[in-house]
Image (cartoon, rainbow, N blue to C red; front, side, top):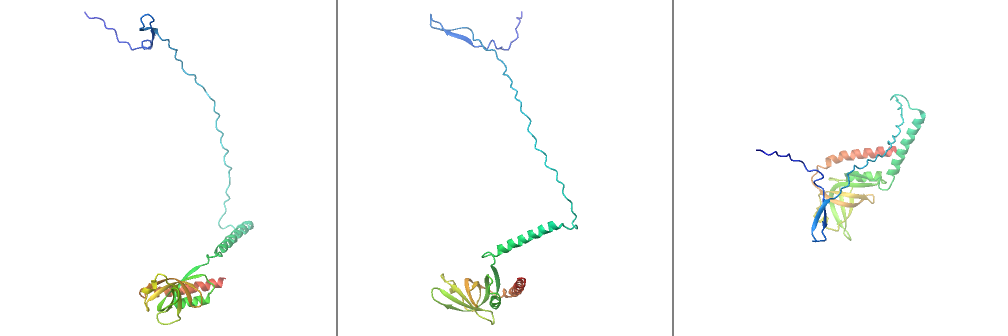
Length: 225
């Protein structure tokens, strides 16, 4: 004989309800009685909020570009405006270059070229790089030294005034080629900031080309003024 087996039933909400417990006053024991009433579950109310549609920006104004042929002449008003703008630009450049320190240039050459150029253009604001042969060093007071420099074979003599506070001139010997960097304070006196020895004579060939171009540019610049 086989007994009928009841199918398993899934637990319902009623089986999982909480029991109601209380303490008996007679024997002081914990007893339960019935079930705790549960509040019926309700779905939360849905709130609908009306949001107005965003305002769209007005479309940009339609601009019609004027097509002008490259060969067509400009009207007189536009020509005057263009010329005024060009004049303002040139005036601004002139004001910018007229400021102190903006007109300084750097010129390179041998002793005879530098002396000749300084004599022709004494008002130029120039930092000179002079190359020549050291003939003699005359020591003065308070670390003042006068370097006598000229071209390799012959020519005028340049006096380079240099204050040697660290003994840099002790390694220089007469007969070597040197480079003096400074500014003229007289016809043939150069206030020297830096002295360095130049090895060999290869530097003399490009100097002739540099001197010719420099003299030509200075002459053209002087004519345009």
